[in-house]
Image (cartoon, rainbow, N blue to C red; front, side, top):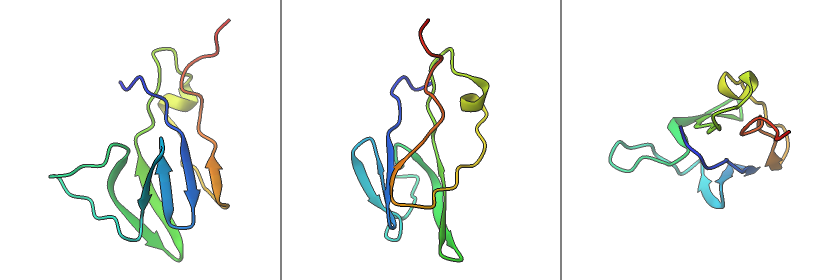
Length: 89
């Protein structure tokens, strides 16, 4: 379990994960140099990027975070992710 929350942003083919930008069009997944957040090789299908990312969560994360549905990103900017952990009371 990763303790660090993920902040994700997309601008065109560039995805920024916690401040580190990756151009998906130029990225090649390799076992020798794995990406901290991207799992496998991003794929562009009919002009849309399909990317699997690691979604970290806290010990009290809601089910929507632990078992997330796919997220469709239609515009540039910050990507809304499920909450990292349950809200504090």
